[in-house]
Image: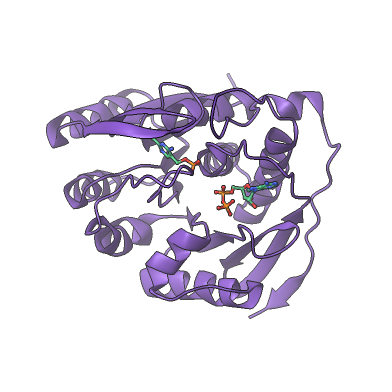
Length: 278
Ligand SMILES: Nc1ncnc2c1ncn2[C@@H]1O[C@H](COP(=O)(O)OP(=O)(O)O)[C@@H](O)[C@H]1O
Ligand SMILES: Cc1ncc(COP(=O)(O)O)c(N)n1
């Protein structure tokens, strides 16, 4: 019998369903992978912002992760919101015993600007979690915090991606270009070379959960056996469609449309603008 690819997210919640484990599970489903979820923090948030959160205990975090691995061994794992250094240490100590592709989305601040991580967590993420990971997916402000420098151009974003790989030993890093250019351009660095992934930018305020969705798609694609470059390229198309085909719901920054790729199969061609040899 053919094995079903399964993928696990270890992340926080969003009761309005646009970000966190909810966005991840919707994305896994759309990418035809069996989705599983371990909750790190229960977050009271909506499209307007984060109101409060509580972290699950370290014991409960461990028991959830063990319950998954003892039963359905995932083909890929992604991490999202991890609020404290102790939670990073617990997750790293469990995942370092496993052999599984790992996507680390270094969630620090929500789209609304609210912080989802204690300051001291960053250092431990660099020291303990990123060395175990296949790919890190910081946006510009997360990359700036990881390297301790500001990023004002695509060239600097390239340098940042390389620095994160070299400093932390993560296999690959994609720095999401944010608003550096007219197009939505992301920079991947792996195996000593850069690759740019560009797609048309949609003018919209409805970008709640874009980072969660993009990293979840990469994890699902890795679970399905894609290479890092293939996973990123296909996920870029997925997120571009999900943002373009807006749902326009919620009073604030609304969620993306996770089923958009079903409607728009290959309407949008993601252009690999160029490849730089390192
Ligand atoms: N308005 C937009 N239109 C098209 N693509 C976008 C838009 N905003 C973000 N993206 C893309 O969505 C993905 C996830 O981005 P996100 O994590 O929100 O980072 P950023 O802070 O760079 O927007 C990236 O591939 C990014 O380039
Ligand atoms: C639980 C949780 N995790 C992550 C985000 C960030 O969301 P975004 O993808 O918009 O950066 C969020 N708002 N809530």
